[in-house]
Image (cartoon, rainbow, N blue to C red; front, side, top):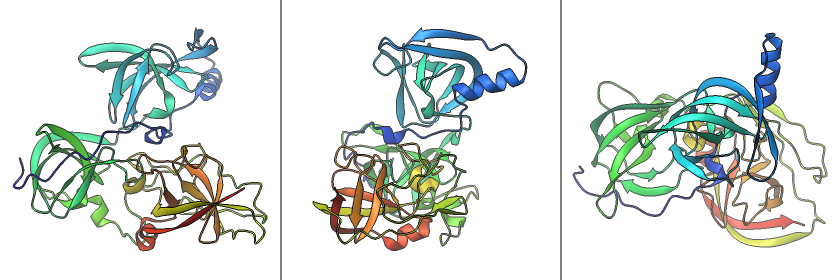
Length: 356
């Protein structure tokens, strides 16, 4: 497959909440309200979530697509129930009902069989940005890591390709990422994602990333719908503006009398809400459900720094509101307005302090 076999497996896939993307799928209340506005009867029933709680369910038909790296379909609207099957990024499901606890009843095909069960609604989207294609042999034009998900914040590195390697491209993601087949350490073939700009694409197709003015951003930005929040503990009255669909906050300096706990030296990276950083359904919504804000939002490993924590990096206060598959222990990803800004600020190591 390759001129030089350079793709290799680096680690196992980590399934975490960060791989779920808040989609544009109507929730339970919206479905009920819209149906009533159309003077139609709302078909409803109740079910159990497997924990003894009653869940209200409204019938709703829609074709949707999976936005998660991988997620399960369960017997009940709760991940504490039995898993019937697993679906992956880009898989199609038929939504038949919407629950009031954030789950959907769906029909899907898994391993050649029809499966009926429940899936988290936030792992679904009405648009499919994963386009499959007949496998084509393409040449790698620059070294690149292979990710298990097409987004630098959430994707974990599972291998690498080097310049002049030949790989099979089996699909595109938002035209910014390409799905490729690669060979891991034991010789078996796997699928992963690399930026399309790293490939010599045939048939006159061009990388979206390469054609974009990276001084502004890279990849696709989708309109967000979450509500950004600033911590009540900050001593100044913050104002948030919006520029090009991105919430811009003002930098807040740590108080001179703040009580700080030294968390040690951290690797600091940067990300923006584009599809290169956050994947095909990037919309600026964090894993906590709020809209990311510059000079404020950071992605952390929540097992190390709990959500809502305020930390100080180089004298500036940030709030832990997001996470990502690539954000591990002693690593923080700072949210910025554009891809170019993130690239310019780069990667560095510095002391991080927790405000107590």
